[in-house]
Amino acid sequence: MPRLDDAQLLSEAVRKVNAREKVNELERKVLSTGGSFGGAKPKALIEINGEQWIIKFFNNEPIDVPLVEHATMTLANKAGIQVAETKVIRLIGEHVLLVRRFDRQGLKRIHSVSAGTALRAITPAGQEPNFGYPALAQLLRSAGDQENKRNSEDMKELFRRMVFNILIDNTDDHEKNHALLVESRNKHGKYKLSPAYDVLTTNSGQGYQEFICGINQRDSTLENAMSQFNLFGMTSDEAVSQVVRVIDVVDGWKKHFVSCGVCESDLNSLSDRIDGEELLKERRSFTPSDYTSRSVKKKTSLFSR
Ligand SMILES: Nc1ncnc2c1ncn2[C@@H]1O[C@H](COP(=O)(O)OP(=O)(O)OP(=O)(O)O)[C@@H](O)[C@H]1O
Ligand SMILES: [Mg+2]
Image (cartoon, rainbow, N blue to C red; front, top):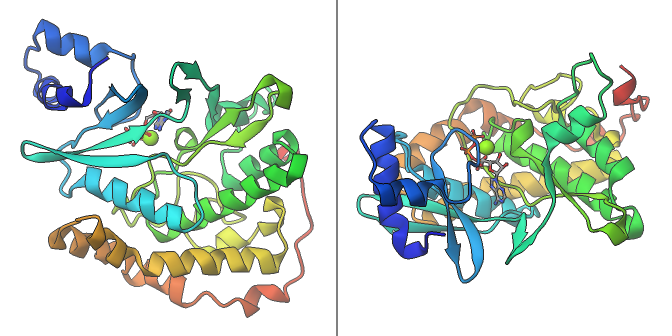
């Protein structure tokens, strides 16, 4: 497996593939180690101190995406979201992102399935799966580890991830961008949320998420996120306090991104979205008292629809 020292070689190989230039034998070998990871961006696997890391390359985006992804992931962590460990390294003329694999521990494999696979598996044949946060929360409720209420903690964290993704404009939260770890046999194969990955402000401002958030489907609003708080196993007061916690962290996004080294022109571009009219209004107009006295909507099973 390639090492950190091979990152420049890998980067050159990726550039050649993108430019449809011929790669040499060594480049072909380093690129193909570890198989394909899927996802839209070019990536490869490297080894650092016996651990496997995914290396994600810059893909000619208008902003420094590797740095922005690292900044967004570490900001998410401040909001009580477990994230895959990330590092940024500088190569000639570009940053690249390193993300530590959560489905490996040294040589040991940890069974992981995407939310898409897990939700499809509980959907009757012929029906469309319900790809969304409330449905995934309900799956964790029934198939997560109930000992010490660990599944309840996962359900709350999933709620925070949804709120964070809405507020930070990470609209690319589709069913392959969430995963579950299958716990060891003595836990009877229970599901557990994997660390979050591929969390970055997409700078799209599209106004809707790729994963269903609530009764208004994919709408990127806190009202929609709050609409089915009960399916995340929380009271309205608990859900409100989670939203307030995430708003507080997102309010500090710029300071955090600066500390990660994001340049001024990228900050200005991201600011147009994160602090733009729509998302800033979501943060500023969130009113806890709108929810605290509201009666909990009748609990319905998502899977019986
Ligand atoms: N830290 C990790 N450990 C294990 N598997 C991971 C990790 N990060 C990503 N993956 C797997 O690799 C796939 C691609 O990674 P990622 O989503 O980061 O790439 P991407 O190219 O940005 O994807 P997208 O097409 O969603 O933009 C993920 O769907 C997931 O299955
Ligand atoms: Mg992805």
